[in-house]
Image (cartoon, rainbow, N blue to C red):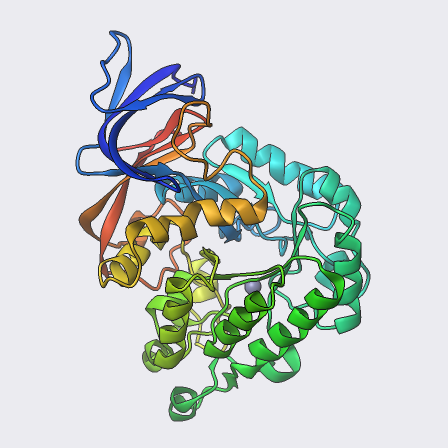
Length: 435
Ligand SMILES: [Zn+2]
């Protein structure tokens, strides 16, 4: 579809890192060109109604599994980025646990090209820390960096060896803006577990993955960050102890950042009561105490970003017995609404702070110059328009994702994306993708 040259977004409340104001927004040739109250509409200009809505920089997801190449029956780059656009995201970081893994310049280039061709959302590729995510030999990080990779991770797997992690951090120190992101789970502690180890796992007779499997790696990598000075990012933090460790690391002035997934501040291990594999995820849903600690970490700035860990699986894979089903949940189309319903409406976060966690703070971690920018003339028009009060029922069969494994199926949430603009072009209008 041809990018529309000029477009006027009318009647919304603009929220960005500069604050909140009622303003119309004019977009031309991919950029914001005018922001102000009651802008006059040009004769040939398309207008998008934003009355009662918020207009903000598009959301940025640091953690998405697009499954291509290798598992296209669960998701493709096209279906995943369509889900992203419908969820208000204008950029996603693709995780490397594809088949083959994103440890090679040719595979990374192909993911970037496929994402650009779909034109629904900026697709940013992560790059593996180690060859084949095997945790042994460093991947060609310099080559991947030259293609634009800034986030290096073996996600899906933890870098188990402290020595390998240290070498990766030492190498990344020579790559400005590079971040080493850890899936913090010590497999010698978590192996064979399928849910959080605690009262619920005992009661259900399901082997557990203890919180210490996460905190022991976070504590170790904070020390490796301290000796190398290289930025470390902790993916999908789930445990109260992790929040405390990250808070202390930041107080020491270390370049540590952390993200949490919506399911880790919205759901607990009690959800596993019915043995429904929709609630199986790594790291697992934890206790009410952990959820409260994560909410505190979000409120006091310890946590830097909300990232979905969108992890599609086919129904055949996910509808197996709890202990056989693969871990993972969808997140792209529900993240904003779960954040509003669970954090903003109860008064834990101001809407502006929630958007910081969903847009400009993750954009800064990923080094995305064109994302999360204030809604001001000269900045790229990567924008989302959403109604924060709109109530809707999540229906798994109505998602744009190829997969159906949302833990929020049937839940009523508040906050719905109306329009999403990518580079000035409306990729979602009135909730429906245009491409
Ligand atoms: Zn992970």
